[in-house]
Image (cartoon, rainbow, N blue to C red; front, side):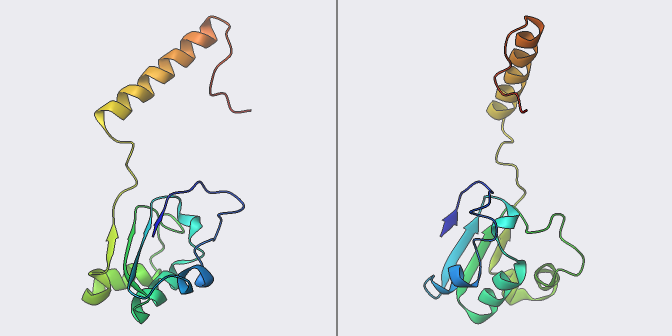
Length: 125
């Protein structure tokens, strides 16, 4: 199951015990959304230990940066079995030559619109 959703009131904590219990045994969970989509890392850890999850991939964490007391982080450093079931990548999908060019172009266009007295397209009020 790949989770690709914005974080909002409906999705906050949606990956919880109920969610995981409704997945097939030996499933893989990939969260490339936002960390708080996961209720807490303990349920992920329990699902990995019990075999409910065969693997977990993420580029976000429930609390960032993870605390030193995060049991899943500790096990990733000390437990080869759990470590072999988890992939953590940096949350940098935007980081490409094309994405950087687009970000710079949009920033320049916004500045020009502001200078010309026009409405800025992506203004947050």
